[in-house]
Image 1 (spheres, rainbow over the protein chains, first blue to last red):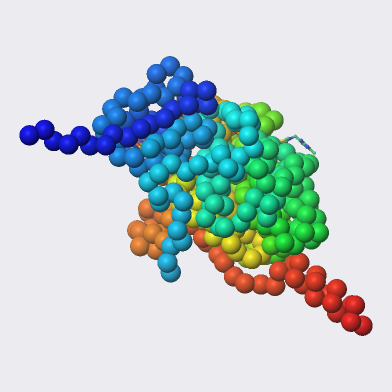
Image 2: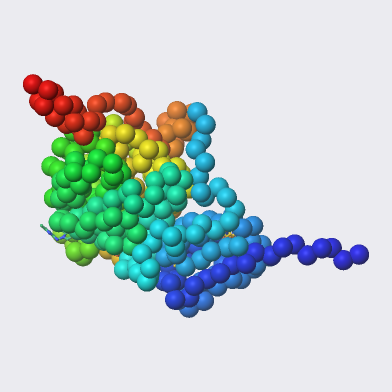
Length: 66
Length: 283
Ligand SMILES: Cc1ncc(C[n+]2csc(CCOP(=O)(O)OP(=O)(O)O)c2C)c(N)n1
Ligand code: SF4
Ligand code: SF4
Ligand code: SF4
């Protein structure tokens, strides 16, 4: 039997607002994010617990998790 | 004591757009600057506080942190360096129904504005003061401020700063503020709760916020990133006042206390002023 898929987080990054400080990636408790050049990107979506810490600590209104 | 509900507790993203002026982002602050994190904590606190945008007036002086009122969709006033408290006093006396919030850098509040700061606290006028302690003058290129640690490098202390620092919270308390607290941009959910309590307090509430200037303080002091600064000064450099009693002294020594450090009731300035008017009119 196939396990029902866990509802994956919807991580929305506004690349026009992200200034690439990496605060969100550095403090993500489950290492979901990584820097790609001067913006942040999702590395491991399945690990996201939707804790919202990346959004709360982003100085630039650039990341939100649904 | 029950903990107040906070916006951050909900596991859905907070919608900041209703509190921001449209079309103003990206803001002017550098990558990793803590001022944006403080702004977001403030907006979430305001959302929980129940104050509407029309009931709020945000006042500032000059500095990077003083640019904050430019982004919020409240009544706002961007004034002179160090004089925000005086303008804010005028706003409050003329419009006692407004909730007045002042955004002030450590240089703005404690150096050029030090005199205005202490006398505002002394009067206990109903006003919430946010002092953004990033240990430096950000806007003008990294000169040392009254909170720059001894030994630290700044544009004006090329061989290390020899001046002792102000303890902003002790200064506020000694000057007569009736609510004194400290938070950090790293502990942004706790900061939201502290700011909510400060906004709800009647009288002068002062919240010192330890945040980071990676561009000037960071670079001049060989701190590689905003993250490193948040780890050293905020996460590891502070301890919650709720835990401090239970921890061994070596874990508390040399650290700044976070949380609500002092809160008392004392007659508020506008109310005393009204009473005086009543009295004189009755004569
Ligand atoms: C009367 C006056 N003196 C000096 C200045 C130059 N000046 C502008 S902002 C500033 C200091 C800013 O530092 P701070 O208040 O700590 O805020 P930050 O930029 O670090 O957020 C100074 C000295 C000025 N604008 N007006
Ligand atoms: S919501 Fe939490 S777990 Fe998910 S990316 Fe953000 S910080 Fe990481
Ligand atoms: S914290 Fe915000 S600005 Fe910094 S890298 Fe993450 S999304 Fe970009
Ligand atoms: S100079 Fe410093 S305080 Fe000013 S915006 Fe840049 S990082 Fe922030």
